[in-house]
Length: 437
Image: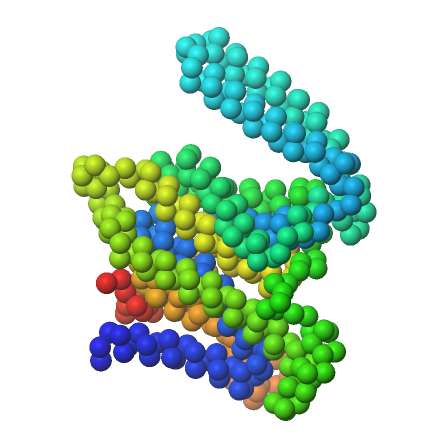
C-alpha cells in the first residue's frame, strides 16, 4: 500500500466515524464534532508550525486561543453606552502611562552608566510611574464597571462584522507572541515551556479579573454571527421558503434550522482551514521552510551558515501563535459567548499537543488528521465508556459498590483514552500516523 493511499484511508476512516455519529446518534452532534474538529485542526497547524518546523516547545497555546476569543468581544460587540466617557479614555491613558514608564526605565538601563545612580533612577521611575498609573487607572475602571454591571460593566467593542474579528484575533495573539518571544525565546526548550505556560495563565487571570475588559467571569453573551452565511434559527423558522425546503427533505423546521446554522459555520471554518493549510504547505516546501527545519535539526550548524536563529524563531513563534488566535476567535464565534473560566491547559494546550504528536509532527496533513481523530475520541469516549461499563455491570445487583464504582469511572475515560492512544502511537508509530517526509 502506497503512502498516499494509506493517508487517504486514514482520513476516510475518521470521516466515516463522524458520519457514523450522524446516523447512530444525531446529525447535530456529528456536525458539532466536525466544526470543533475544524477549529482544532487550525490550532494544530499553528502548534505544528512552531514545533514541527522549528522545534519550539510552546506550552502556552491556551493564552493565544483566549486572546483570539477576546478579540471577538473587542471588535464585534456593540460599545457600552457611556463607557468611554465614564472612564474608557482614562484606562487608555493609564495603559499608555504604564508603557511609557517601562520604556523610560529601559532607556535609563541601556544609556546611563551602570552604578548606584542608575539603579536609584530606575527605581524612582518605576515607583513614580506606578503611582501615577494607578491614580489614573483605578477611578477610570470604577467608572466603567459601575455601568449596569448585571449586563455590561465593560467597554464593549467596535461593533464591526464578526468576520473582521477573526484576523484581528490573529493580530492580537501575534502581538502578544512578539512581546513574549522577545523575552522568552532566548531560553532553552524546557525553560521556554515553563515560561509560556506561566504567561498563558497570566493572560487568563487578567481576562478573569479585569471586568472592564470583557466582564471577567461574568462572561460576554450574544456575540453576533457571521451573517449572511450563518443566520439565526428563529429567522429561518419564520422563512416560508426555508420551511418548504425543510419539508421537502422531511425535516422538522426546528432541526433543519439548527443544522443549517451549524453547516454555515462548517463552510466558513473549512475555507479558513484550507487556506491556512495551503499556506503552511507552501511555506514548508519553500526555501524558508527548509531553512526552518535546518535550524530545528541543528541550530549550531545553521548559525554557522549565517542564519539568524533567534530572529527566525521569533518569526515562526509569532506566525504559529497568530494561527492559534484565529482559531480562538472562530471558537468564540461558534459558542456565541466568551467564558474565560472555561480556558484550561488540558483542553487548549495539552490536547492540541496530543493532536500534533498523534497525527505526525512536522506534517501539516498529519496535524489535521490528528485533530479530527483526537477531538472525535474526546467527545465520544465518555458516552461509549458509560455504555461499556453499563454492559459489563448489567449482571451485578443494584446497590453493588463495585457496580457504582465502575459506572462512575466512565467519567475518566477521556483522560485514560488520550493517554492510551498516545502510548500506542508512540510505541508503534513514533513519528505519528502521517510522518514528516
